[in-house]
Amino acid sequence: MEQLSAWQTVRSVWQSATRPHTALVDIEQRRQSRLLAGLTLAMLITTAAATLLLTFASSSGPDATVVVLFVAQVFTLALYLMNRAGHYRLSATLFVGFNFALVHGGTILSNDVAWLLFTGMMLLLSASLMPVRITSLLFLSSIVLQIALHTLHPMRTEFSSLGPIIITIITGSMVLVFMNHRAGLESERRAELSETNRLLRESEIELEKRVIERTQELVIANEKAESARQRAEQADQIKSQFLASMSHELRTPLNAILTFSELMAVGTFGPVNDEQIDYLQKSMQSGKHLLSLINDVLDITKIQAGMMKLFIEDDFSVIIEVNTVAVSAEKLLRDKPVKLVLDIDRDFPPIACDKRRVRQVLLNLMSNAVKFTEEGTITLSAKKREKEVLFAVIDTGPGIAPQQQGIIFEPFVQTETGIRHAGGSGLGLPISKRLVAAHQGRLWVESEIGQGAAFFFTLPYQSLLGSGEHSV
Image 1 (spheres, rainbow, N blue to C red):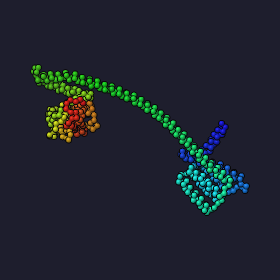
Image 2: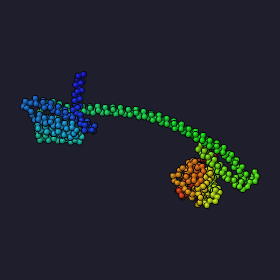
Image 3: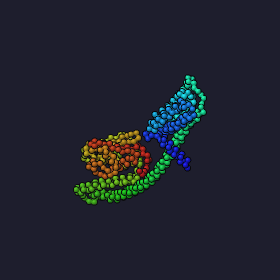
Image 4: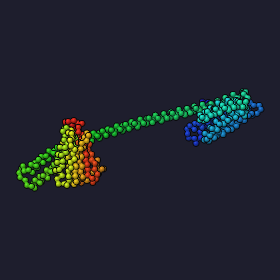
């Protein structure tokens, strides 16, 4: 137990004596500074021991070798203190350079070739502290110098009995310090790796915990969203059923009222005067407008509920239908100073579509053009394209602002101009857009304020639905 405590004390003192300066922040420089401190300390201790051995062994007093060793101790101590002060790079360079000079200079000063046996130690120090190119340069320089010394300055080659001991002590201590440094590095790296693995495991645990929490939150959010969606669908279905039911309930008596009013106006139930006929006609006009609104509500309800049915026929005549719609539009114009212009290509192939619904789209667009155009022209055109026909209704009305062109295709939404000029339910365009889309076509508007509006829609010549009845 006491031996262990003594060893721990020695290790503690050694670590304190080799601790890098706080100015060194780079981890690699701190490690190298610790290694340099250990090497210089080992050099001080072993050269001191060698000096004592040589002094006691010499009967004639200190020789040149002892003097060189003393100078080496002083210089090594200075380098140790310089390194501890934070000047690692300069200290390492001087330490390696000094040992190179000491090995070869000591050989000449002491006239003893035994100094060259420290060449391996010098190269070991350089390999530990300096880049590879510096060590390679020192290696080649040492070979050249040794050849030159052998040729130009012959020296004694016999060794004293203390020579091998001193060489072994100094070189061995350098090797031990280096090995201890490598073991310390390995221990530090294992500790760093262990700490990194621990942090990684903690991070993985935390990440898994967060993933579980987020997954639970996502599941709850999805459940809430699904519940809200189901409630919305249920509410929408109830609304659609209610509107459809109410529309049917309103349309049935309204049709009866219109029929009886028309019969009364023609005198079926007895003679009526001009004033009564005028009242009856106004009543029928209002009733027809109300019936149109109810039909629009029914259509948009069926479309939103996915219950709209198309009856596809393959004999739709573009020219006949456009002219029929034009006749109806002429009646709507009455006494307005508006000219209706037809621009129709000839020789259209038959189109496969729901005749009644395409006619409804054309009438909706023409009705809007008549409502908004107080003077000028309304152009109804039909143009052939490669695989489709392009219909257009162009008026000279007030126009639609670009920022409002998107909302006019939303149910029950109208622009300020629409409310001010015509009123209505705001269902004609949404219904038309959905009917065109159901035919694999496209409906859009191009307009500027004060420059009228142009509504375009396309229909393919051949429907992908095929002939017969289809739900859309």
